[in-house]
Length: 438
Image (cartoon, rainbow, N blue to C red; front, top):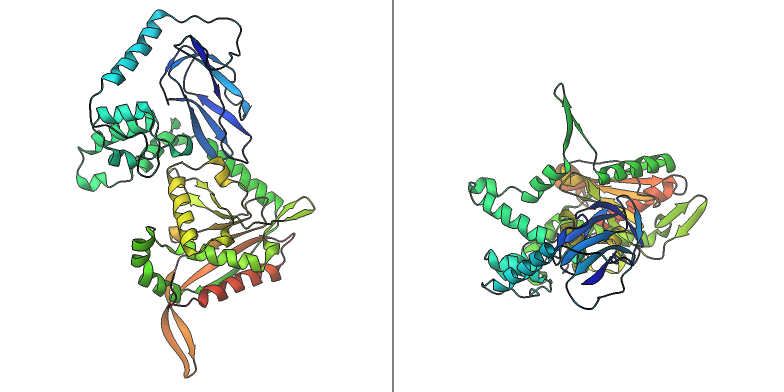
């Protein structure tokens, strides 16, 4: 028998450790190739560590809530073979019952006997599928094209055994429902069931335990309010030209670039340009020390299906054109909704933007994301009557307008800087050329 060391994988350049949140397997359990063994957490990202081999879990080195460094061995998996894959970290030989070995052999034989439409190891988009996932897909009659649509929760968005089994179960359950019901967001339903678990019911009241992420966010928000002297500035921006331009080019943009053009990347590009004009907004405050950030990394608050928020970061946002910004925004938003973000993709933000208008709010007063010193809230775009100034006099007309709320830390950002920042943003957006290309 050979022993394989299951190590904590690298999860990003800026991530050095993770916390064990739950072991999905116990000592003595059989583990299939690419099957999740343990759940880990880094800041606000939860993920699973899959096994790179099939075998039996024989030893666990860390308990729940232990902090583990990247590269450390967290468990030993025993597999069939004459030569060890790596040097064992245990001295005492561990025997496995013959029945366990037989079960492993049966699993391999069953996989080899599957005869169906072959599924490629990699898809056209470059996604990798393990032998186990491909075998399940063949057995269930899932084509390569259909497999491509399954969201993966594994490392780098890889589709795991649990992902494909969940997809198969949902497919069979929802196929029996009327079409109007099938259109419901199944991911939202699944997350609601998993994350909102009743603890007890007393007199009609229901007590619900906060999720781990909810607790982290709550602490982060309270710490920020207690740390920064929050003050807000508000400004109304006429975005009529932007609305007209987007309506005119969005279909051609989608056809040429393969990306849906929303208002978010337009605003994010303008915000990055504004930050470049006011670098003292792009700083971090630690005690009495100010760090001027070299890069402009825009955090983009995104809502998760369970109601929590996460802030993926667009690195070097000021260097992206509109196509690049649209691609980055769409990619991060989609992977945020499917819990497929990498830990380093929520790190190193220097300024944060939140779209409260997405929920119909006209404006909001967001809390600063520490150790940053400012955050911008985009309100809903509304049709409103407005005074239009012309060379022939003033007129009343219908315009598309929105409010922008700027929260900043008054310890280092005074009212002049905070107000000039959004005034400049207003000027950039209102001068949008409706005849420009993209």
